[in-house]
Amino acid sequence: MNVMFEQSFMELYWQRNEMQLQNYVSDSCNDLTVIDRKIYELLSKSDISCYPFLLRTIVDTSPDCSFLVNKIDNFKDYEKNISDDDKKDTNQYKLKLAKAKKEDVIALMRVRGERAKALDFRSYPELVLSLDGLTKAKLRSILKKHLDENRDSVRSLIEQYQIKWPTWFSDLDNICDSKNNYSSDEQVQYLLSKLGLNLKGNLKFKVSSDNFASFVIPTSKENINVIIKESNSSSEVLTLFHELGHAIHYSMIEGSGLSNVLPPSISEIMAVVMEYIATQILFEGDERKKLNDIMLIDYTRCAISSLFELELWENIAGAEELYMKHYSQLGIEISNPSVWSSDSFRSIDVVYIHNYVLGYIIAKELYKKFTDAYGDNFSRWGNWLVENIYIHGSNLVLQDVMKIYI
Ligand SMILES: [Zn+2]
Image (cartoon, rainbow, N blue to C red):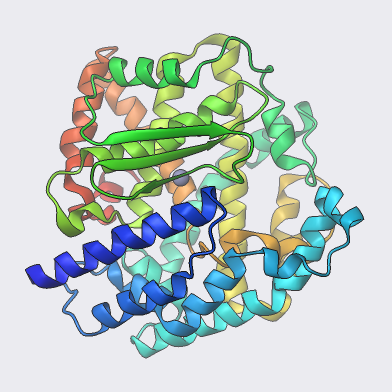
């Protein structure tokens, strides 16, 4: 690997993350297309064969893709024609936003498809999946197996907890009791000490109900920013453990340079693994059951979302019908299929949502493996994760993890 390339890339990578963070948390208006152009030009003239996952970055930072991604990400552009009354009604707002965005979302899918073909892939999903050693057929079979095994129990849980499609996320949140004597700091310290983890990087937490979402953005090897959208119920621990999973991973990578740029698949899978394992370690009884129910219900929705998306790439014109066909498997009333284009997993983070399902499947397998091999000696669980996953950063190939656990 060319040292000069690696240095130049990392400078741009940290800079971009810093700008993105400012846009998300400080309402800054950094124009990311300028830095995307620099990344694109650098990658286009470099040998990236040691880091094939950067092929996706080449497509996503190409000027036409970058323009559309950043336009869609800065959703205020689409709000101009939405009335104040509609803005107050979450579902009306989502529907109006989806209609305003639809044309750009479709244009972005087309551009990504063309760019992938120019790199000799049949389609953009095939490019992305091939980087993880997956094919569409293989992924579909994993997702369908998960659905077949869990559809009936998820349907009865949806009925039991009275979950409705328009209020899906708040209904899931309400499964747990309201927050009481809860301290995110204590939860984090408790988990880290149970797993015997001494983090190398500095984790900066921001927990607030003002955050539009929860995410982790490292802005240097030492600074890992953890943003948590506060919730009203104790289910917030799932978000906390999930984001902590991302942060621990970034923090424990050995070496400088490109090994610190985690492929999205590995990063997301390991975040779900931490979310699941932490829940089993730190909770018991009814509380643990409810948290496990939430994960099962929502990761099953993710499996359906991914199956919908795979078909959508083959038939954009049939979006609304496909939406109804796939989501109605949840056994609840699905209305307003035009809302499909409001989902960021159809534009910003495409061919991504399946990683949550892979993470959930791998997490359950790993949990069994840890329990059998190490019992409740949790520091050995932590040590296994550090030695086998975390320190390797982007040098770890998802294919190797999948061979063992799926
Ligand atoms: Zn995540």
